[in-house]
Amino acid sequence: MDFNMSIMNGIDATIEIRKTNTTIPIITLTAYAMAEDRDRAISAGCNDYIAKPITRDQLLETIHKYINKI
Image (tube, rainbow, N blue to C red; front, side, top):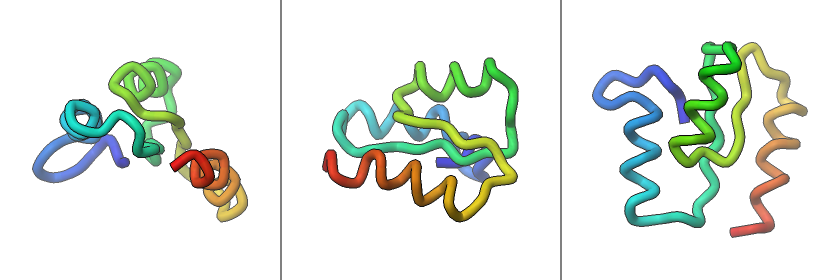
């Protein structure tokens, strides 16, 4: 999930998803790197948060934390 999307921001999109699905993993991937942004994402229902720039390994490691929980 990205914070900055054209029609709906990532926080609002996460809140909408969580209304009908509380188990699907949502990982925020964003250029916003402030601690408050991470807190907002987690409070909205995201499972994890990665600030850009990221590495391939960082992304895969984060995905693997949740892939077996589906």
